[in-house]
Image (cartoon, rainbow, N blue to C red):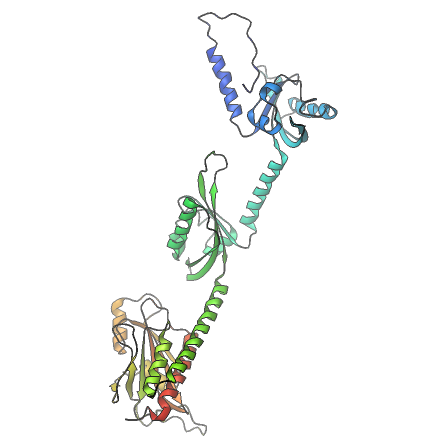
Length: 475
């Protein structure tokens, strides 16, 4: 059934006067009206319905055959008591410029009532005079839903306390809210269209993998925590973002057409770091407890010291060394009477135990005689003994060329792949007995203050084990 009323013809047509082009034009107009998502109807100058599309039929239930040709809405699409007012509102568009917007209730075919919002405007004839009115209408709740969606989108992009980024199908930011721009360390417009790899130094592969999965399969069942390094003028900042994703598709297509991904995230770095630090403290405390139990079963004090060393290495360092002060006791902190440490001669160290230099593994005692180590002046181990406190050393905080790392480690008589070192003094009963050194290779972070505290706890236990029965004496 056509969405418009056709007028009949009074002249008989001959073979030279085909009507097909006019019918094609009318059919095309009807098809265009029927294919629109908005409900459309039209009235002539007398208020008679001339057009009625399928969306109008869907909303009210009246077909085009039932609607076209009726005088206004009275008695079928509007209550008779309201018909005059409704008709006046609709036809007033012929006397006013632009579009007129009204809201009123219409009746459905099954007797229900639907509140609609209409937009009507005059239709001009060839002479420029009003020839009728066209009217587009939609259910008000649908309009309200749309307005709410727009308001929500604007609020998310302006006032939300979490980051919102709309990523297109090429995985580039298309819309960014103020919070996300601050998190990315850039302006809201400067990040648009740029590859994520230009904004993030680390974590790009994981983030792009998640976005690609959402485009292909849909959103994951729960939030995802992504660790990234953000490029900023001050350097890279390591952050953890708890992220949620939603696939965006066009509502105008019958089949879902992907528009991109909505990415929402919150910065949970402080909380995750606190969790990690707490877990690390629990692990290290547990390691110290396990080491103490295992060392209690050792008859040889040197073996007990090595047990403490091996338990401490787990997850902490790649290599470790134990050096004792030649003679069993070395210089200590200043005495109460101010006489100070024993500075009768340079500190000499003898190797007690070490992990294999080629690869991480169990520590190996050096034997009864031990091997003297000739550290150069200013070596971290010597500084540790002289100061009676921990000393940290590093080849560099940024990526350092491998050749420079080898030179730096070789000069300190450490394994060639060593990048970071931490020396903790071995003290027992007021005496400095030696030094324990922990080493980390490339790819590991530098030792921090919390690491030094742990190393000092381990050193106390190793010193107590080695001092038992004079284990550090000359044997």
